[in-house]
Amino acid sequence: MQYRTYLLLGAPGSGKGTQGKILGNIPRFFHLSMGDVFRALDTRTVIGQKFVDYSSRGQLVPDEITMELLRAHIGHLVGIHAFKPDIDALVLDGVPRNERQAEIMRDMIDVHRVFHLSCPDREQLVNRIRKRALKENRFDDANEETIRRRLVTYEEESKPLLDFYGPERVRSINALAAPISVVKEIVDAICEVK
Picture 1 (cartoon, rainbow, N blue to C red):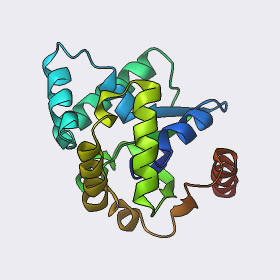
Picture 2 (picture 1 turned 135 degrees about the vertical axis):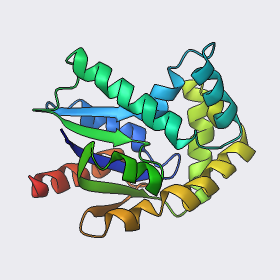
Picture 3 (picture 1 turned 90 degrees about the vertical axis):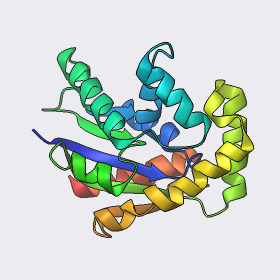
């Protein structure tokens, strides 16, 4: 079964998590943040230690580990009836991270729309991430060098997904607009698709 899916794509700090949480509070939408899944790992486990190692260097966790964890996590959510794929739309944030992951996920997700939270001003993103690190106690956001490496990684690995999914499915949205304006634009676009 393919899950009806909406993707949130954007550089670190562009607001994917904020928008995903808002959408996840709308009935029949289920938000899944891959970053939250990774951060919830027990760092005493092998996979938890691997996540800490990669994220502290600003690198992406390898595709095989990410996909294995994602499938297991979604399976668990379906098993406990938190995510009901027959009636819920899946809102993904932070996955797929590159074209290889998107290829691997083709049999799992039916992407209806990709929301590109666009923010060309990288300094604004760095400032947002620094504030988030303090507010949310996120160790993976604390080091400026790591932040800048993550932004480069996004440009090289994740941004090409816009071409992968094509202009007919991608909607670019100004990530610096007020959060309520961003969510309105997303909801309006979802209503167009239905």
